[in-house]
Picture 1: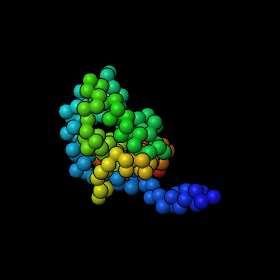
Picture 2: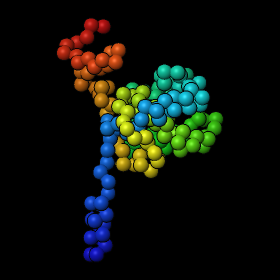
Picture 3: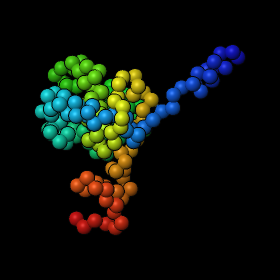
Length: 155
């Protein structure tokens, strides 16, 4: 019975989780990620992160579907354990965190005041639907301006 009390106290002391919609990386960290991406990832994933014949797009609903509603650590783990394919294991923790920041920015998540500092911290951050790319919300960015769709846009 004493151990149950300890488990309950432990669970109550756990830090509250946050989501990627709360600005969990900084602009500077994403900028560093861009430099790493250009050197180690762009040749396969494309300059616009839109994929190509060798690798998938790193933006959009299809990319995010395997990460949404799961800890951000899952994205980090995918990168550090599989990329780049010809040098798996060559990325440092800091480089991988910067790449995660870049991917968050590229998918519409806002920057914040604090950098992603440690891989272990990502276990308590949940990947939320991107703020302006959620299906059916009627909002999208056009030239950096939020645009609310009130009726069907002419194509």
